[in-house]
Length: 335
Image (cartoon, rainbow, N blue to C red; front, side, top):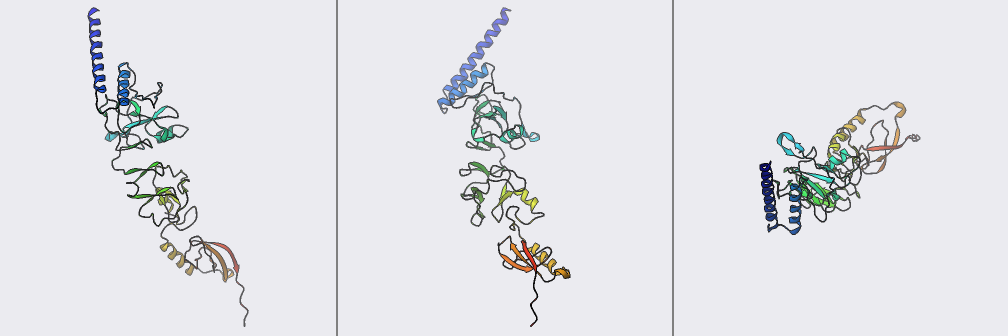
């Protein structure tokens, strides 16, 4: 019994000596601020007492009841890429609204009955050492092999956003207040103050402005577009929808679902409509009937011979028209 007590005392002494050495190394580290030194010393003391390595500072208070998962999550487990189904990243976030740990804000919104405010996130958890710490680009746990190494290829301190996919181009738009896909403002995108949206630099000078056009739901899938993670495109008319929704929609439609203007190259369509009108025989009781039409493309109101399906605008030659009224033309009296 006496020998066992001696061994325990020796072990405790060695452990205390190791802890003091680690603390001394932190306190003498020239590149660390006093705040960072304090955080790391607190983390070591918590670990020595068998508690999770939760890093605190004067501005971030991690609740003691925070439950930190001790397992890893993967974006691609076969290739050992950490993250979730939405993003590759080596970090989790702590939701300030419910004090729970999620791999990303989308995971939070899918698994709870409320939405997270990304800008209020203050705490993250390293997926390597499972340590809670203030949000930052790297792990601040000196005991972690990822200490002071980046936890994502891209990090935004304003959006508290991490993405570890090196193939993605991402930038933060200071006007939108959000991160967007692309190389950056004045590189491949410009921000339109009227639309309150980032527009491709290739079409910026010719795009149609619609005030705050992105602050609405996609007309096809009804998801709010301003904060959507899916790419959004602007149509010729100025309205927007998700790129994938546009591809599916224009497979069977050529007009904007919002304003009805033509949104794709309609030359082939209109040539087909014109040939159909010329080839179709009008029943005798409809012969000589006229129609007043409204063109959805140029907004002109013109007259045309009545047809069951298509009417050509006399101003812009578009077949994207609607019949306002129709009547039988009165025959001119014989002279």
